[in-house]
Amino acid sequence: MQLNGLSVDQAPPIAVPLRFFLTAPLFGIIAGVLILLNDSHTLMNRYSIDAIIITHAITIGMFTFVMFGALTQMLPVLAGAKIGEVKRVTLFSYLLLSSGLISMILGLKFSLSFLTSYAYVGIGLGFLTMVLGIVYAIRNVKNFTATIKGMAASLLFAFFTACLGSFLLYEYASNSISQYHLLVANIHSVWAIFGFCGLLIIGISFQVLPMFYVAPKFKQFCKKRVVILISIGLSIWFCLNLYYEEYELVAKIWIALFFWAFATAVWLKFNRRKRPISDVTVWYWRSASLFLTLGSFLWIFDEFFKHEYIVMVGILIGGGFVLSIILGMLYKILPFLIWFHLNATGYMNIPTINEMIDNGLAKVQFTLFILSLIGFIFAFYIPQLLAVSALYFIISMALLEYNLLVPVLLYRATKKRKPDFDMSAFSVDGVA
Image (cartoon, rainbow, N blue to C red; front, side, top):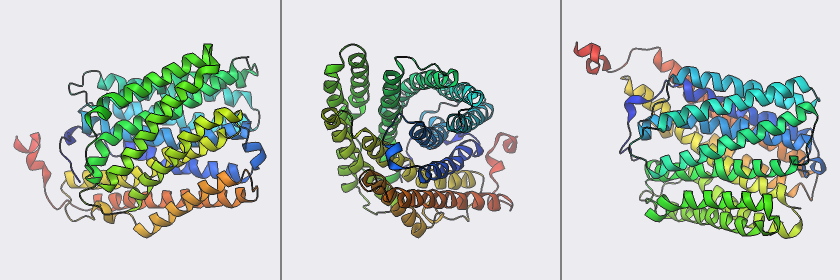
């Protein structure tokens, strides 16, 4: 692992990212249970209440929680940008997002307008608190790297996505669905997946692949142009959707081709690693590349089939690409945080990053996850597969939670004993 350029002295308390990371699989389990209680015919309609609930249990409960948790750690470490009052800001956002998402699930499911009303306020404020806190932190970053540019662009789309989502929830809460509801919902979903999640993954990969996998660095064109070109494509797509819907395919091709190019670049970089050792996180990245390729092209061809396959596009890109990357990086980031925080406080006799998680269980979790995604796709043609796939997904998320808890419990147990090395000698107080 290459740790060049890391500013480790400004890292936030470990509890900050951990609360986000450990909560994410729980919402995954909730999503799996909700899928198990539904049928494929209902879920084929992406605008059905059950489909909306399940989608947001994953996109907010997993995508957003993991990404916000990772950003709290990566910003200080990679950019030297420390979020002000990080404990209060992140806890406030976490509580709002958690309570807001639970209220949304219950409010929409049981038609409880007071819970749905709280949901659009809680989720909206939770999102905006984190986004504005991060934007304020990076405003004075001197070395605006490709990774920071990717983060900044994704946060811009996250801001608008949150605003659009709050508007949609307000309409459900007030029971006043406007004529623009479906248009706003479409923009909300595309900007969330490609703008917020997609751009953030691309930006982070510029730093993560060379650092964690000793993969070749991305070319300057990719680092300097891809994020802005995708952002332009998403903006063009937005305008075409509003005024010239018959030409939106042009922008979709633009966006899809750049994401396909990114998927291809990731695959090739893993082939050219200096240390081609494979583990479950590599499997996740490779799977994500394949799912992104399939999903990007299906998103284009779906235009010719009156959006008949749009839910499959969501499974391929949202589940196969975004969620695969998130789960793979959890297996890297969380053990690294545990090792880093223990090592930085003088604990030397601790397991390595690769030893903190049972590789066998991680492979089982990966296999069940991939089988569940494949099952969800074919369940539209073989409805009996939905229940089995939902069970695979639930078990996969439960195993993920267990795999993440083991290093955390190791951290807590280690902190109870005296450090192997007294780091106070290097502190200001120690010198004084």
